[in-house]
Structures are given as C-alpha cells and as structure tokens.
Amino acid sequence: MESFRRDWEHLEPDPYMADGGSYRFRRYGLFQSSAGQLSHVTGATFFQSVDTNPLNGGERRHFAPLAADTVNNPFLHELIRFDFAQLTSGTHIEDNWLIGVHQIRICATSGVSGHPTPEGVHRDDETYTAQHLIARHNIAGGINHFYGSGSDPTTHPEAVWEQTSYFDSYYFDRSIWHSVSPIACRTPDNAGHRDVILIDFVNSSEVH
Image 1: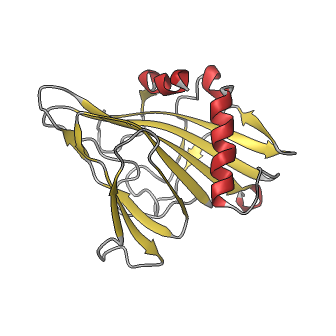
Image 2 (image 1 turned 180 degrees about the vertical axis):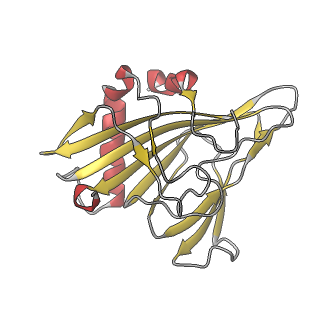
C-alpha cells in the first residue's frame, strides 16, 4: 500500500488545461474485465463531453499512463473489485465492464488556487464512480457538495462533506449532481496539494 501512495509523487502535468493553469497533475489507465479477470488496455484515451466538462471536454485526451508498478499492483486490483462490489449487487467484476483509473493531484501555491476536475456542478458520464482521498497537505477547501439525483444543480446541496482522512471515500452514479470547491494554501509560504483516485465503471455495451 505504501508503494501505491508514493505514486502521487510521480504524476505528470495535465497538458489539457484550457485555463492555462499548471496546478493539476495526473495519470490515467484503463482496465477491461473478462471472465472475472482484469486486463490493462494500453494506449487508452479519456473522453468527457462538453456538457460534463465545459472547460476541457469535447476531445480525446492522452494523459500520462499509469506506471507499470501501479498497473500490476495487487492493491489496485483488489480496490477495483471492492469498489465494484459496493456499487452493484454483484460480488465480483463480471464481463463487459471498462474501468478507468485516474490518479490526480491538485496543487495550490501562494496566491494561486487549485481547481478540481471537472470544474463546477456536474454529472459524470460514467455508469458508476468511486472516489478515494489519498492525501491533503496544507490546504483549505476541497469540499464535496452533493445535489442529489435529478435535482436542480442551482439549488443548495443536499450534503456537504470535507474528506480529511486517508481513504475517506464516496460512491455515486451518473444521476448525481456534485462538485468540489477549489483549494488554497492554508499557510501561504508553503505549497499545498490534494490527492485523489477516481475509479469509474462503464458497461462495454454503452461504448460506441
């Protein structure tokens, strides 16, 4: 598990920053389930619609891939299986699922906030998503807001939660409107960051 946590020290800058920012670092990988086994899909790209991500959506993005040690890490494979079990009635990953793994670090420096991805209130494109906090360091903000299934995203959130501990987690499907507030340095003379892992699940039959 410690080797897994150290992955966030070796992420690459996000090259798709329409706002010109340099505060986001990430890696991305895609797995496919077959006969209950997970296989890594090399060279995978990530796509979000403009509706989901107005700032950076609408194109296929080639992020830095997961490191080889991450792809083969038994902890990651067990985490994927665990998350799938929380999100469905099944006890194991069946065929026909594509699983995206996003390692993300959002940074804040003196006078420069770090913004989440996607920015603003949104619903995800994927069938199911799990989000886990890896670390918070010297930051304020990064607060999760949940607006409920089918609710008007302009209304007040139904729940607000600050993840503070390692592996504080939440699960949701594509019907849930949600957002995360920007982060800022808690002490301006030191940089801060917020590290998360997102694992999303899409049934292969929905991919065209």
